[in-house]
Image 1 (tube, rainbow, N blue to C red):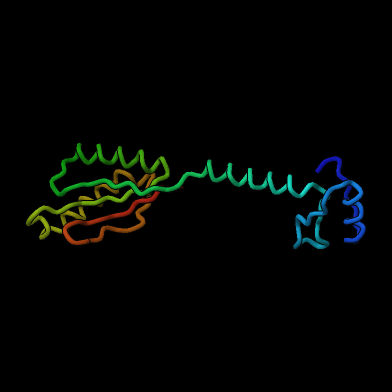
Image 2: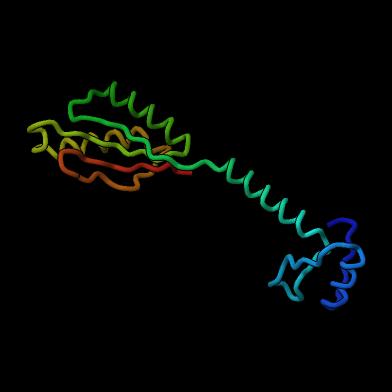
Length: 149
C-alpha cells in the first residue's frame, strides 16, 4: 500500500519492529518467496475481514428453482404467457423446472408432451440452456432450464 515501507528482514527483526509500534506482525502471503508480512493490529484486521465476508454473503443471491406447469392441451397464447413468466425467472438468475402434467389417457401420447416442451424451450432458447432434457416421471414430464450467463 502507499506510504508503507517495503524492506526485507528476518522474522525476529519484524517482530521487534512490530512490538516497538505496539502492533502485530501478520503473514499476509505465506506462499510468496520470501513470505510477505505486514505490521498491523491483528484484531482490527480480523474484524474487517469478517465484516467484508458478511457484506459479500448479504449481496450474494441464492439461486431458487421456480416451477412452471403446463398441460398437453395448452394453446399457443397461454404457452407464450408461461414463457414470459419463465423469462422473468431466468433473468432473475433462477432455475426453471418446467412440468407438463398428463391427465388420464393423455399419458399414452408422450410424443405430444415432448413436442410441447420443445416448443416451450424454443420460446426461451435465447436466454436459457436446457440442463435436463424432457424426462417422464409418473404422470408428468419435466425439463430443467438454466440461465445462459
